[in-house]
Length: 464
Image 1 (cartoon, rainbow, N blue to C red):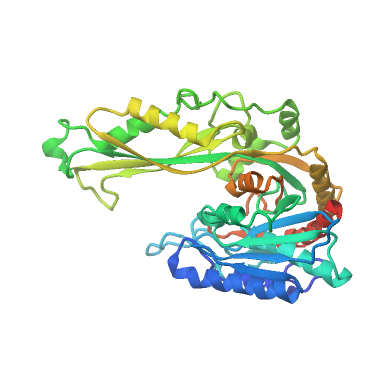
Image 2 (image 1 turned 180 degrees about the horizontal axis):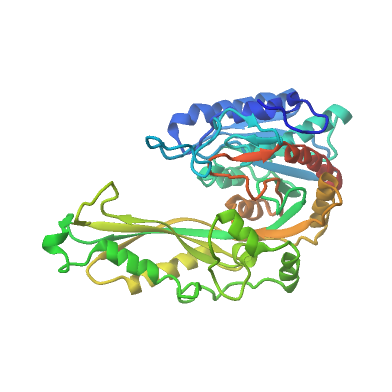
């Protein structure tokens, strides 16, 4: 393993982080159920070694780990949340003579942490979310070693199902509402705008998903014999998909924008100061041009405007060569990213009505509704928000102002914490824009791990 160019820290400083990264804790894959359990057990033993009170709670899925210090009545109670499950390792097989492509293939073993000469750690889960929650764990460990106690009442909650939508977390919160009572939640599972720039995410988009399936003929048909006489479901799904947007990129579903809460003027002004977002979007995506709802910058489109996206579409023969059939069915999977005041169930109803209205003749439409999550936003200028910004400044220094952002992704559990526990969440991310989360070559700078340790210590002091 190449030695990174770091300050004074030896590689042993990261031993616990490397250990948890070796667990293939893929929550979506039943074959890895034992790895998920092993990761949870390791966390239990590690947290107990810090003289914390630790509980492993069984759920219908994977376990939830809770750790607490001794609570003192007059102290503020802070919950730190993280997840120890990770995304699968998916990559296409190499074709004969094909070289590995870092955009498609892992260049290192995904569950054997590897550090390059620049101090960048490569492993599945390095950013999402093991590197981030382990930085908090290390911060807690160092504070206890130095002072014998923490400045706040701590509830450290680690779950193993975030990558499958946290299906058992909200019921767990509801069942243990009194024991989990706290003043606020802190999460590091979001991103930074650039290296060295402390970033406070005060808002997330919500989500609503559905799948539309078109049924055509009873069986696949020979396209030469029957082509032109019956509706081809592939043609129908393409035509239906095309109705979702106007030519300029605006969503065409009637009533889609009715409840959208516009961005505040201070937000648009603050985001302008974060650099050339359009150029960054092109660089990060490798796209040749921008496209989307007119009148908004790419950052505003990504963070503060609602979208309709086709995440999967298909039907008929997908293998090599030609197979001249009219398929019996075709499908598409849709997701809608939502902003404050939009109701996911209402958006799904509007989308379903739109699809039914525009469904071509000759096919039958079936719609299956998927998972939803509310958008989340808090006031970054509240006392807790200002405390978070001071902690970020301690962790990352004064070279750059703290970036106040929203993010385009969705973390439904944030709204669950607000709904069930009645508290706000501070989203203090340590992930860089090119971290490759959910993709091959996921990575995390060890410098960000070190900053995360400082962030934890400063945050608990500020919140005390």
